[in-house]
Length: 196
Image (cartoon, rainbow, N blue to C red; front, side, top):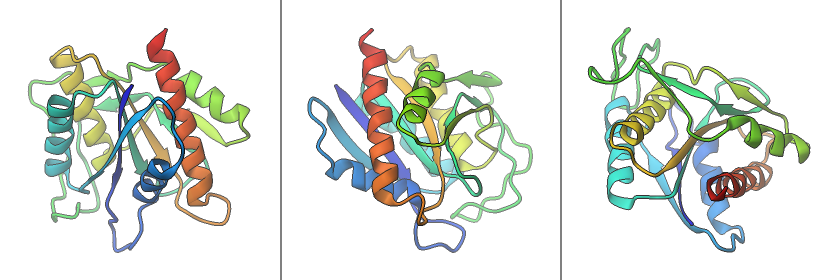
């Protein structure tokens, strides 16, 4: 099973992004039967959107798991939906700060993940990890990237299952090893769902 796992570069003056640190650590864990590739995305509305579309078209994974870092919160948020809107109070790493702009003029208003997100949440909860289903990925680069991925998948009928997971910032409770174990569990459950 071919899996692409992405994380984002640091942003907002930070030297670390939990999504990228976690993705790198997942790659180092044993993962039998999974052809796993880990890629870093820029915190850029334009470049991340272009990158995720190119990844889908050129690498054709069976499963795409996109990780992002949540600004606040103590849960792993399994994102159910991405909306066709960019609106930010803070610029991306390119200095772009969109105000109520559509991501894709010819795209739907919103797309839902094509993976049953409650299954992923429940699997994490059963492992003692705080997790919830989120109905808003925000309006920053995370949502924009997720939207571009789902738009590409639905528009071109790609046989790819995709989900976005927001991770908390790294701290004593959420170490990179704990988050990596949880993300590997998400990947394994995505595979199980895909095989049904």
